[in-house]
Image 1 (spheres, rainbow, N blue to C red):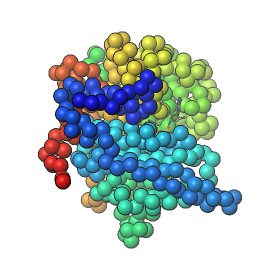
Image 2 (image 1 turned 135 degrees about the vertical axis):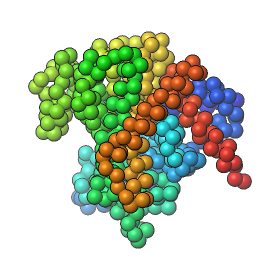
Image 3 (image 1 turned 135 degrees about the horizontal axis):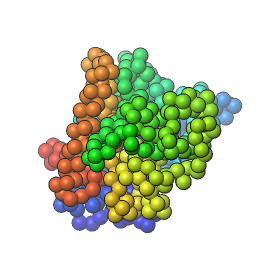
Image 4 (image 1 turned 30 degrees about the horizontal axis):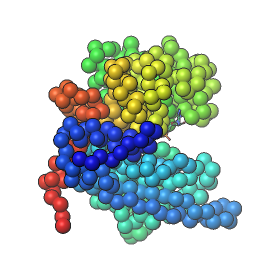
Length: 421
Ligand code: NAD
């Protein structure tokens, strides 16, 4: 079969394709389905004019990619960042398809992004940008079409604006159009910490596989935003020893363990982990290669590459971020017998509780935290165990097993639905 070629310095979409190719080969996926699964259903680019506070007019570029809606409505976050590209959004949309399939949710995969630096925008500008982007996508999003959620630099407040704009157009309140909303606007308890909680659940599974105990497990976390801080908080609460943490401004280490409750109070004030008094400063690059048991990248793509993979000293990598490890790094880490819990499994706790939020919105009946967390635990444990046994059965690593499982599930649905002509 003719494959999509990969380059030496792959972009995020190429990174996804490289893993897809290995899994497709193992599954003996036929040429037609190979093409269907790698071609996004729909890619939308929108121009977003915003009247800035100083009276000038500025045009921002926005995207929404719906990679697959075979298994249900598209599902995936929206990120606001200066370096957003269509290729990145395309990769993230495909990862969402595989992620929803790995944890067996009735969703396809989508992702959105706006090229902007939210730190340089006022609240009013951010709101106008969000509302105009939503209005431009009004025909393609919706509870039964495509359900956005927060991602890098987007939060509950932005989800509330999206929900309100969509509802104004629909002439009724439609809470199920986005997830990750504030609680009193149809949000779900447990959503904010869900990705971090999911990371903790799969870390528990991984350490028990190796006969390790939480209290002897040293964890380093890259990124202290939604995923990183919540993972730190929950792992710390469960007895893990968090010895290093970084964010975009700096990194800290204390081999005796960091008090995460105190660190969170420091970050609340200082807006960065840097300067935390009970730890030593270290560079972000150095932190990644310090001795530890679990390395949990929770920042951005391509952080573990062929350049630093050889120096990584972790036994387990739990990918809180999407695409933190390059395909080249994968091979090096595989040779070093590092156990990787791949992004499409490790960080699926977020989309799982997003699914719960969507279900609750549609039912108009809201669950308590115990129910949300128990159902999340059940899905994450089952998914980890399914991927792990798939890996053992097919003699592949966890990443390729997760891809194979996901591709198999999506391909099965497409075959069952048939091709409409
Ligand atoms: P966020 O914006 O809340 O936090 C990102 C964090 O990473 C910030 O602390 C930032 O300072 C830090 N960071 C950025 N570049 C860094 C670098 N080079 N070194 C160290 N730290 C750096 O974003 P988030 O929602 O926590 O998402 C993080 C990752 O997790 C992304 O890859 C996202 O796609 C993925 N993810 C998020 C969710 C979710 O529920 N929020 C779910 C699944 C996956």
